[in-house]
Structure formats: C-alpha cells, structure tokens
Image (tube, rainbow, N blue to C red; front, top):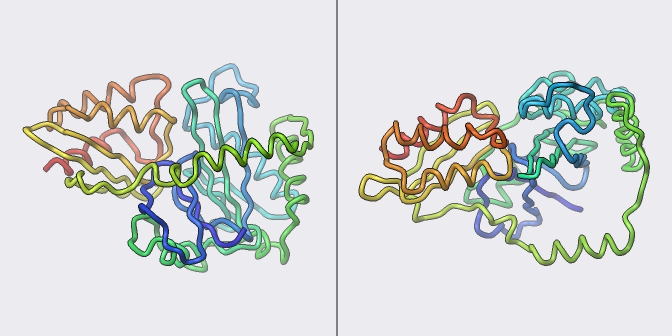
Length: 306
C-alpha cells in the first residue's frame, strides 16, 4: 500500500498532490489528518442508524456515537494486551500516547459511518514528514507530534498482529462489548469489480472536492478541540457572497454544505450570521462537533468578515 496520508472529510486538499511517493486520500468521515498505508489498519463500521448496536431506550446524541462504537475496538486491543483508551474527542490512546484516530459521519437517511485508523507497526509521528512530501504548500493543516506523543500496537506488544488476526480481535471485541454476532465474509468478485468501477468513476474528484479557492479572500482560523477551524469568505456590498468552512471537524454529511449555503447572501453582521448558523444547527439531523459552542463558528465568520 505504501505511504499514505488520510485527510478528514472537511479538510482542504491541495489542487494536486506532489509526486513524492506519498498518496493523499480523503475519508468520508471528518476529523484530522492521519498517517495511513503500510503499517496501519483501518476499521470501518457501517450502521443503518446511530443506535443500531446499542440497547438503549433513548436515541444516541451525535456526541455519544464515537464513545459507544469505539468500544469494540478497545476491547479487541485489550484482548491483544494493549491497554487502549478512548479519552474523548477523536483519538485512541495507549499509555496516554496516540495510537489511532476515530471519526464518523451520518447521511440524511440516518445511516452512520464510523472510521478509525490504528497504528499497527507504523509510526503516527511520521505525519508531518509525509505531508511535507505530499503537500509542500502546506494546505493540509496538522499539529506537530513528538515521538513521545505516539505509539503503535507493535511498540506496545513487541510485534504487530497480521491483518487476519487483527480482524479477528476487532470482531471479538465488538461481540464482547456490543453483544454482536460476527460473521466473516469475503467480498465476491462482482462486489470487488463494483468497488473498482466506483473508484475509477470518482478518481481524484473526491480528494479535491474541497480545496483552496483564490476567490474567497477573507479568511480567519480558530484553534479547536480537534485542531483548527477555517472560514474563507467573499464579501461584496455588505453581504457574504460565498463561503467555505473547513478544518478538523466532524459533521453530518449535509451540515457543512448547509451552513455554507445559509451564509451565501447573508448580511455581513453578527445578528444575521447568528440567525443563519442557528437555523441550520437547530435542525435535528444536523450537527457540528469538535469546535465547541456554535459561537466559535460565528466568531470566526465575523473575524473573516472584518
């Protein structure tokens, strides 16, 4: 698989990646950039609803989703002797060091996708060096990690499980923590062909869905719980002509596009921006996690307007 950087759904990507032996890919879920590829494993959980594997009378709130569904991963790692924890936000840790990242998204039909990337024998601390090669212009934002900040399954146990053994650990972890009954299945040739066809159809378009736009010349950023929130705007005649919201955020599939649409044509004053943002985030199907209160977004928009 080689060296890969996985960026979150709402991060900006360079218009074209540098040809430096590092592949840039975009996850469907949000969150921060992460090292991926050889030495790393991905875990994907696809559910028809937030509460599909949870025995609870009350529906899960968006901020509860990762806490619930990371539990199978933690149990699987514990079975392998790795004392993994989910301290909150979007990281999985062992010994207070980052072992992996986790994020999720939700479609307008209520289907949920949870994605995690774990360091098997790979080094999460390699991320800044990989980005220097794949994105020398620095479009993808990330924080600097020290060797003491990260770890891997191999570092914790002196060796990394095979992919098959890892899959068995995760399946047994979900069976233990969420009372599931795992069933092993290999994709058929027809299914694999369909996946290849879909990948060929999308090509690089998915990666470059969100990229810097020179026409949005008003910009502001805010440090957030997950990393950064960026707002790029164009303003004309006292109104926001267009907007791009990006960064290390976790949101429903429609939330960021809905926020951007609500800001287009909005008067460039705080009251109007508050109304636009509140109208979107007030809908039961919309959520925006990782930035703190909605005022963080509103304040950032107003700094970009200024």
